[in-house]
Length: 534
Image 1 (tube, rainbow, N blue to C red):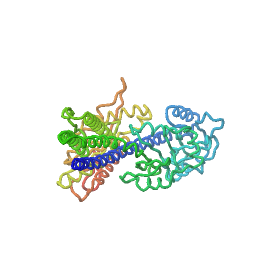
Image 2: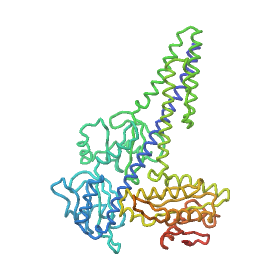
Image 3: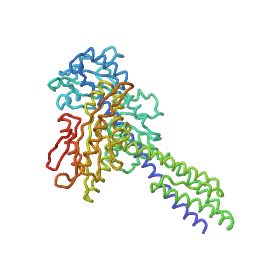
Image 4: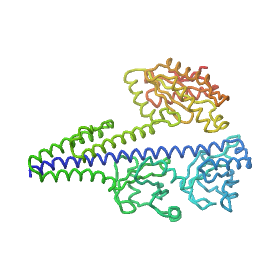
């Protein structure tokens, strides 16, 4: 009885620790998966919107040169994920599209009552629609629309591209990053938009039924997804197939849709049950031996468990480099050695995945600089430290001059190379303590802690000269680039009191530098005005 009680004292805490570790690990994996999916999907939406916006700014599109525009649309469609590219005049009548596999195309169709046309006409802004049924193909689509402007910047029509659900399915499937659960997307009224369950048969037919029958997910599941989309807890409920799952959700596409991930509860707990079952068997068998053998077995069980518990605690605290010494477990049972080996493999895998996801969340994958998210998170902290220590803090905003012309003339692939080239020059021109980020598009922001305005001007001028003096070259051809720079300094709270105000003042200075001729510095001073310097 004493041995049994001691065994329970070992077994019960182990159950609790293993259970907590399993739940926490699953929560981290699902959170990281959703963050990666959201970042990937939002970036994809932004890139597709940018593609359509670029088309509307082409001279032959603005000039209603339909033949040249249609040829360009057809060529672009072959190189993109768009299923159709459509040109609509300012009255809302389709002038031409790129549908070729249907006998009847969309020419002459009136789309003036479509939300994307009305929004483009009224707000003159780009727009991504919710689910639509194409008037030509009768298929469910999503449309990326952008208004066309004439020379007087008046509304002159709309260009929109459509994407079908197979493309979104493929996008989600490719971005799963090894996640073994299940994910799908619903819109804000609960209609199921996508599904890539590999076990579902007749997937294409089911998809059509989803749209035409307006298939809705369970209201209870949808309410849980809406309520907890911005919160951290895991939810446990029965899914559409009646199976118990762990689930998390997150809003995407500016809150219009929700991505929901689910993991089968039994799949989550199976490794836990195996580990606890192995431990329980060892303890139960030990109770039937003699006192001397029991003492030996107790020693052989207690020591490796303590090492495992120590390893669990270390990993739980974030020390993913921790490894259990497998040589020390050589005299013990083979099961403990395998458990130790599995633990070490798990620790290595968790570390690799954590590093990868952290890098993806704070780094611009094109330029390898920090991204805007990192600047907002770390910049506030750095600014507050400078403020508390009564130190100066400067911000430098940089924009590549006439970068759009590079994309239009050489293409986006060369444009990306030019961005990387300029990013490298900027990175080599700043100090180690400066936080260098790609703020968005062709704009970069550098936060310089403990740096006066005079020192920031020297850094900015060095960047400007280095970019001007080191053109990007393709073979024997050189692309000369210049940058406009805006600089602002925090010295006291009289003018700038927050980190966001510091960025805003630097951006104002950048705007003045661009308006004053580009390839120059704009400096925001204490008198609330901006001076430029060549």
